[in-house]
Length: 638
Image 1 (cartoon, rainbow, N blue to C red):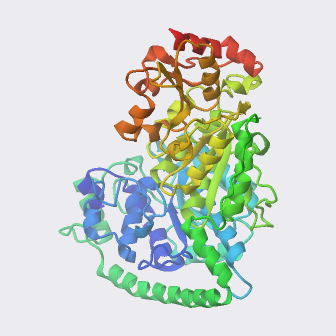
Image 2 (tube, rainbow, N blue to C red):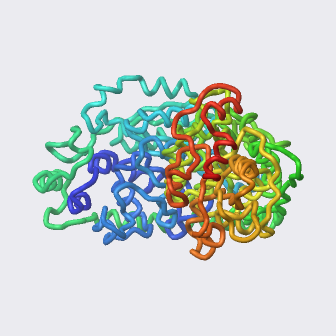
Image 3 (cartoon, one colour):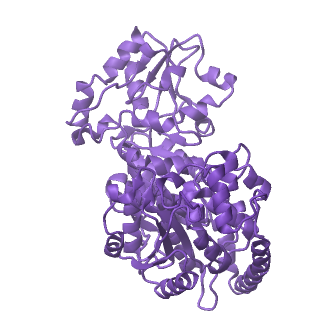
């Protein structure tokens, strides 16, 4: 209460109304060790209702994690780990960034899946190295968001028995009582998903303990434990009202609440000495349990040295075997999605912990892993995940797989559907997770599927996202190199933007093109001396630019392939000037909006598409929109 009042901002309703479940989880139910917060077999706790962040910070502080009372006093202030919504910091016990409702519970599905995958790989009949639960606290808002429905459906299908979700059911949202918008029977909905649903009272400790025992007894279904609660419990005149959802109590109500709860009014940020004493003693108990696991772990390593070596590699993110990229021959025309499909097999062979799949687009995305089994309830060792038509949940689950540790995940869909998964993609970038997004069907050359499936503005929109690496390769070789760059990256997500249409093999004039591609751009086709015109292009437009340049023989034209514009912008002035000299006319060619290219070329020299596409054969669509080599040649020539 004091932290939120001091910040004059925040959500006191959940921390007050659900304090009991926090005390139960951190004080009795969960397996963790605050002195080693990243222990690989710890239970994970996700506060999906991230607006109630002081709930989490207060519990982590009392439990002995690295969040101090001074940090809490600076709640919602710059530099404090106690941000307005939880921000991922595993060293402090914050398992993920939450706040956008539904993301937490959906990401937790990925964490629970990861536990089953690692258990299937590394546990032996004699010893269990991975045997932990994923716990989640959700509110009414989380369960109204569509992503939660997608992910919960999949969790039921996969029978994730170690996923336990507590529903803080207080029937209040910002606009008022939930009955103005949310009157469905949540229990029946989750039962239909294949979950075990239990019900109880947030303030009944013995009852909660009994429910958790019952939940753990059923390892075949995820659990939703619905706990009836009162938002802002303890605030005498405001509890149970929507005013508790997003505003401090105010000094008068704060004083009343402290009176009602028996808290000294003259002490700010007071913590009961008994709470510190309890958690201090409990921390020793937790450390003893961790020590027993560590003993088992050491015995396991002696018994299974090969598995132990693999485990170290899996957590390092490094390949277990050499990455043998496929080769592509001159004269060979192949779509970059098909080239990516070949590279996927090499990546999967080099990283046995490479897991992922597609949103019901395995064949169009060319995302199958040959010889790899599907992940199913009966085969937790499977590596290919069939997400169904659930793009948003897929991306969130991918985040969960990455957050858990030990796995290198990828997800796949069409570029036009990035709009379905953008919120989870944004969290990938915020948390700097090494998740690979395979986004195919990248332009108007999708053709017959028409404007709903032909990306126009999507490339510009994802390039605008900080800490996201966007690579749009131009041929098979560039695609292989793009995958290599993506798998070396450990500090953020990578998007591979791939075409459906066949593109020719590019003979590259830069002998160091692989090194320079990682810098964002390189010279793919050069001319003698200083060029009159430099055409910068990406993806399938690189070969289009080469074709257009041949139509303007009187001009000396250099073609620069720029698979990653943002990486190029980060290079030195000297490198950029060496590729794109200021003395030359600069032209850009890309089958999408011009937005973002103004830093390379003037608007009149950007060959782009500023309208939605059309339905028809790819070549006909291009002619209909005036996106042809001849039209590009006119810009080069003028």
